[in-house]
Amino acid sequence: MKHTSADHQSPTATLPPVRITPNLFAISLGLAGLAQTWTLTTRVAGTPPAIADGLWLVAGAAWLITLLLYLRSVRQAGRWHTELSDHVFGPFVSIPAIVGLLLAGGLEPHAHMAGLVLFVVSLIVALALAGHLLAVWAMDDAPSTHWHPGYYLPSVGAPIVAAGEAAVFGAPGLARLLFGFGILSWVLIGGILLHHLVGLERLPKPLIPTMAILIAPPVVAGNAWFAINGGRADGIALGLAGYSVLMATVQLSLIRAYRTAPFGPGWWSYSFPYAATVGNAIGWVWIEHVPHATLVTYLLLSAITAFVGMLAVRTVVRIARRTFLPRLQPVAVSPTGLPAMPAAFGSALTPAA
Image 1: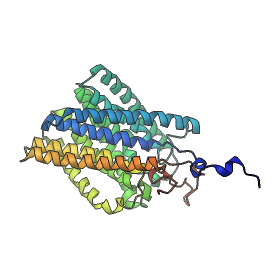
Image 2: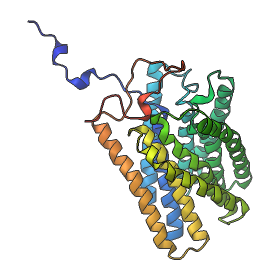
Image 3: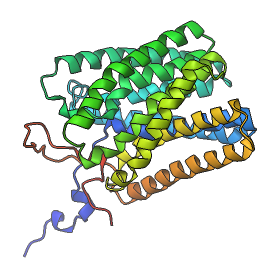
């Protein structure tokens, strides 16, 4: 019997190619959020600045590597004209610009002009994407049941993050403008999301981790407002803190649901919202002069660092096993007529060993 070379190929040689999806930028977003929290604690509690600087470097490297891989994947698959209109992944296209805004703030103390250039470029891209995506959603004839909390990112998350960074760069007027932009968008889009999440069908399991994004608007807005008002507990800060407490109780109630979601890129949806929550909590600890503030700060910081570290370790293990990144597969159609849920939010198609 004659054997061909295909008979001697390893199993991994026949795996379909991976697809780099924009939700993978949640990795660099979470790392940047952790770096921002360490930067805050360096200022208020005297933690070593080298740790924060190292985290900023890791976040920047992850952002740049993901950006290059993502652009290559989009080009090879010919997704330039369909990426923004994708019902699942479209909103996540704004994450690279949000990470750029955060990196600009981290760069500002060391290289003000380079940070300012990165901030301006990232802001222009973020605002352009926010407007374009809103137009795409407004003209989309698909049912609103495909909406998930990631839809907060372009027109809520990006301007609120930009507001805090504008304050860092000494532009209080721009910071307040962007803050108002983000808050009004939060109210409008939040109503649509609440209607979907409460009154319509449940999110598919791979999208359940995006529920963590629900806590992001109040805590990120709280952090931005502290940057704008100089860290004072005024009425706006207190109102945002109150809503943050409500969303924190929601997150605690969702733990059982979160445990049902398969591990994959979607799990990084937890990282930035929770890092921002810890940063906001630490800010309040010092503003309110909580007893043993340094100890409380270190406990909170250790918890979020351990959590993000756990995500990083599990991600590296899955990458080594080639089970983390989603792989291309024929597009299935759900009973509603929309494409079935991609694997990119859960485990890759190849089962973990």
